[in-house]
Amino acid sequence: DIQMTQSPSSLSASVGDRVTITCRASQGISNYLAWYQQKPGKVPKLLIYAASTLQSGVPSRFSGSGSGTDFTLTISSLQPEDVATYYCQKYNSAPPFTFGPGTKVDIK
Amino acid sequence: EVQLVESGGVVVQPGGSLRLSCAASGFTFDDYAMHWVRQAPGKGLEWVSLISWDGGSTYYADSVKGRFTISRDNSKNSLYLQMNSLRAEDTALYYCAKAKHTYYYDSSGYYPFDYWGQGTLVTVSS
Image (tube, rainbow over all chains, first blue to last red; front, side, top):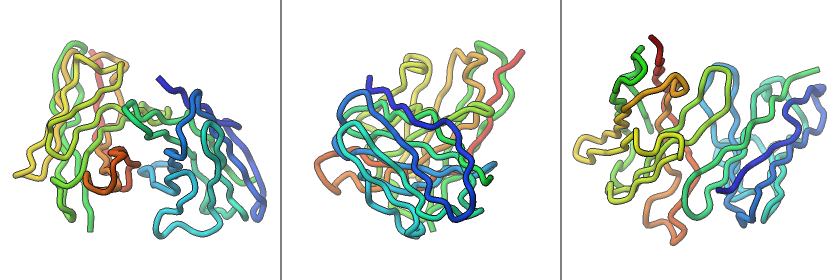
């Protein structure tokens, strides 16, 4: 099975900072990569799919890039409401639809 | 408005059984594959199972294969997860989630999850 890793596992940044989270697949997954945001005590929310397509209603400060095995989620200007754990997920070919271990983002 | 409402979570003893339900509304249920995802307390997300739009194909995580069974009743807009031989490590919040695209969207067949329920808590403990 394809394994998903994320780095860093946590980060603390100031409001307005540019934040980048990396996700790596153990094998190539083309662009079948999604990012989810889970705020404390809340349900996961789809942010980005197909590696770089913004889900409807998601602020444009979120962006995604990558293909194959290496992917990034970028928050161009961190806002207080972005405090959350972010998960990547692969959904290419057959299951399992593995999630990464998550990156916890908070405000410095 | 899409709504997914899970139910059935309780405290159950190790080795016991449980059936979770997910009631769907606000979309054409039988056009979409559906998933179960779980989250142990303080831990990350773990995909559990997938069922195709018509119930003809099912898939499971290795951690639950042979113990859990996913099913759906399209006439009732409902998704189910039958959980047998429960273990302490199955303790988690169980979410149902909807595939983003219909089964006829394209040839890839697999899509991310665009709507999630609020979850139902399963606790396996003696």
